[in-house]
Image (cartoon, rainbow, N blue to C red; front, side):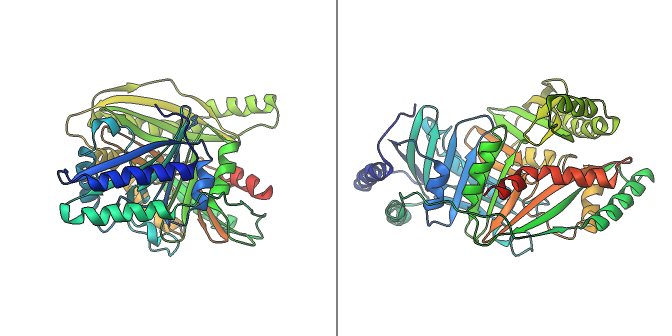
Length: 459
């Protein structure tokens, strides 16, 4: 249990003491993993991260939870220099060495690009096709208090002194001052595609659907906002969190000068000791300005043949995947409404027990991308997307999350954006089916970034 502890600087001093004790202990069997933990004061994790100078940072907070995890530095970093198979086997090998006492707390955090390829767009280049980090220093805050933890992974005795030295340097570089968060309303905005191109794209896609070439294609839009001065991603993330607690919130800055942030309502899947959970989220209406209007919009959503059909594509796809991945599986609930601050969706959850020898990468490969962000049939839709999208999605709508020794959780990185200097790039998408209307779908992609835009105007 995490208990209330001392100030952050005192916690860091305590970690220095534990680190020195570790230095004096020569009895180690390599490779070796060490996690040194001390209780500390309950602080704003995002403000703490904003004050750090370290370029590799990670933030994670589950939906409807007071838990926050912030990490800086890398005890281990696994990136696209390794294939996905080698990357995940590397993480598994390291996590297998984690003592059971820490099994639920030691996590690799990261994600993958939407299409599984390394983006060529300069803004996304540093993220690669995949990137996961085991943070060197973590700050964990929850209902039971807070703790600071230093993590060390060493492959061989010859590297031991170097790894301890790196940990010592990390502790010495930690900043404890809270950075002032200042931003302004945006001064310029550009969208791609514009409405005329969007309408042409929707008409082309619906024509192909009616011709039987595919059933659904999710088209996305990129919106670039320019501010007078650099934007602090954690300031923006804080405001997102205040506006919507019913979302997974994340931020990843991996050293390339950009930060990928989001507040997504959609879990791709989670696994805990072989028990798999996933969910179908599709179909959209805005929220009403009055309770009566909100109820009317909700009724229109649940009775819409188009939206129910769009949601059913996702549900059917997930059930097919569970049939391949699980020995037993079922729908965990009936289709229902998920109400968010600006919009509402159709939601259905599923559960199952993974078959033996089915790993995290197998589940990722099967489930991502779902028809909610790609299309139906999946391969046809993915092949067609570049024809209609003049930009790279990068990590937008890709899987983002964490992997531990016995569990993992990945979300779909929608309601997300890339913060780089004075520029914030937001992405949003809409599922196009046979009877889609270009104007209505345009309003939908506007509504999906509406929470961000509303926060900009009050910054």
